[in-house]
Image (cartoon, rainbow, N blue to C red; front, top):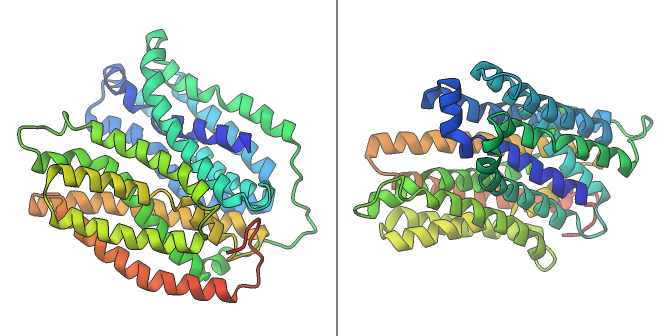
Length: 388
């Protein structure tokens, strides 16, 4: 499992290696904020689009081949971005990186589900997600230092991590999927799995709200904290990411004590109440504590979601289902970001956005909880490594 944790660190590093060098790269490329935002988001779009295809590829090619392709794409994309001080070249490189990270995320989740020690799949999946958040934080700590050696090292530093990981993967000698084994389910069959939609909705509300708390918390605090600016409160976004990373790691340990179904349903119910508080109570310190608590509860359920997903289909189709769930989660993050921006423009405040999230959580809890209870109670597929 050391490989999965190191891959999580490298992936998180690639996701956020641009913001710490933002001013230097804007000068280098002669880019506006709009243009540099294309560079920052290019990876996320291709990563999102690759979730479902990536799962299908992993289920058909096997774990080792798919991870090898993903690591080569991640390395090649970073080296491409470092080749020339040209914004278009850098954006194309980031798109290629996103295809690699999209492939590797779902494949690593399947790797953990199938190869983790008995009873440890969910916790290790949570640890993998936590290592991603730690990688994001490492980018902010180290990129400003390596930038002194030249702008290329903003891209070379994450890119060069891929090749030791590729050597480590090949040294593991994981067993390939037998061609004679059961065929993976076609995508239409995966889409018809109700538990996948329920878990995707839960994950969208959790991951999407966590991302938006990171993006919008400084602006939310600036609305109620007099004589402050968004720039002065930017630390709030970084603190959300740190809390989220710790939450995902701790969620793995919580799975040793509490069933994943209880964690999944309970976290959504608690988030609903916290969003109601963020909507109704405009007190600065209260908003800060509640937002950080919401980031925690939106993160501790990561391992539980994918542990439950492993009960909803056979091992030969796990990566496709994981990709579908994560695709819905990424769509939620994008939709909620646009929603909060729209609400801010229309009402002048972000608070109404949390009211909408509270309603969505309440609906998801009522519909999704019943779906999961029914699906998992009637499922005849043994869940890898742990019983509910």
